[in-house]
Length: 332
Image 1 (spheres, rainbow, N blue to C red):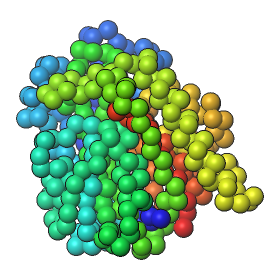
Image 2: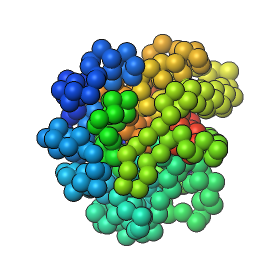
Image 3: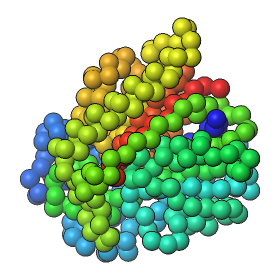
Image 4: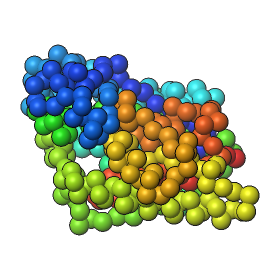
């Protein structure tokens, strides 16, 4: 079993509104965007003037134009998590990271985050695109606790607007930037317990969602949408079953669904399909956009300390690979 001590998140200050995207003259507008994906705004590390002038036709230029690196945004989220957990940097014995668009091949993204924070301990990446956070939990839960330090930081630095083609209206309306950091322990009790994890994959679908090196994000939209609805629902139903097995006093009305923040219409379809009770679905994709692996944990972080989270959380994510994963959190 793992204990969750805190989650923190960070959004860069620049905001891409639907009005801004309409001003790019790429054949989109507020009504078109809201009908298809339900997203009103999203954050970015890119200056808006850079997007306006270049539409990010060369992702190499975006690396230089970005106001912050993945390590810097990941560290900002990490500091929020440390403050919430009432821990210090010296307490963290390991850093794991994963994202859709890492800054470098080597060193590991986790090394860079640990370097900025000042963590002294092993740091490595466990990445499965948008499902990275739950994949990290899955592997930690399977490890021998005595091999792990008391506190481990899981960081998902996502600044994927740098690989977005702003002439492609189907993808540029989706993406935003956000970084999250969670602090877990294999032995020190915290406010939440991770009581079940889930991980599945379908490598034959690897070409359906891609970010080539120094290229733009692409996906087979209609197929990926169907996949996401089906697999996110599969994860929710599995975790719901685990929650209800705990005793007759447990109810689905105490279980909160937090899904991968791909787009609002996908999330609504999953909630309908799985008959998620009214008020038990939390999301922020409508104002933050699709922020990859940080989407679902950022919703958790946004409501940290709130009764709105209920007694348990089914966190259900899907990602390139293709992968789908989840974790059941219960109040300790």
